[in-house]
Image (tube, rainbow, N blue to C red):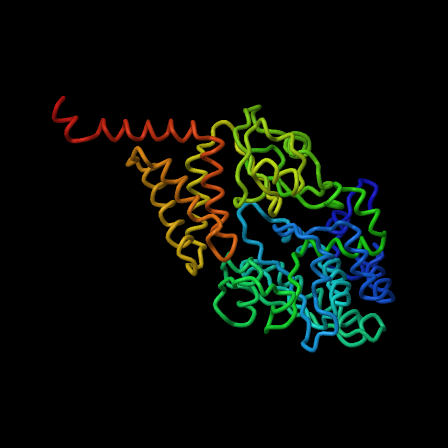
Length: 431
């Protein structure tokens, strides 16, 4: 850890895409340490650290690794999810653009722990330059004997490949990602079986987010207690929070898990421009239901946010000031989900379409009395009735905005209906 209390930020600031720079920060020492431990010991260290998945689901990382069957007769795979496509989220790009070697070291440790000898990094197709940097760092690692046969001089072998996506948000869902890797349509799969039992090519597979794996080397190097003590009781360490929207200093901030949302907005991100009032905050990318200003003292950790009806997701914080039109904000979110729906599940395919149509009607001056209730009912009918969380997110977000800001939606609806009535042919004829 650096003197300013950060873990990964110093690596990013010192261009640890280059091996010579990464070695100045004890690069690959954690991997050497892990390769001298047993696989179970490595998994136990990660479990004790309370590292949770940082891509959205928040599942305990060590426990996930432990699901891999022992002595499997099939090959085991590690897949890194860098298909970062959630609006408001840009943390993984930050890591792979400037600190790829810490990701590679984490891949070595994770692969050894689960018994994988092949890893695929699945990266968003639009991330052309980050993909190039990852490939360059992988080549550098092969040339240095860090990857390939006899990793770091041991009997462990590991090959790492980069696979570029083709612009489908749905492939950020782990089973859709696996289908895409196999050359199939990127449709989510029914669970169970879970990927740890039957994943890539029907073999045991662990899918982890970029940021999750990047924190593994510091945990092994410094010990699980060191990491666990930085966070909350059930979520250890630090993580990156991407803050965007109406703030003076938008950007990526590495902070302890559990840092209050208010502190993030007003201290780290510099508050709202022009001294304007806060209206709404989305705490975890557009998938997360919004929060009111009176709710921002909440600690930014998965459990605390779940208690107030939202989620940390990818920790993409979107701040909206008093001038924000929340009907337009919801419309932008729903239009994204409608466009990105894979259309496999009827509730998502049809439901997001109807949400889109109703909001479009409201914004174009054709609102109807039942529109708000219809939005809520359709959102409720989607939730819990789809294979993957994309449909759930659309339903939760629609309901969340109405639950928290119904007054604004009703005022907008009344204004739209009044304007429509004023422009009706009958009214004009009567006047």
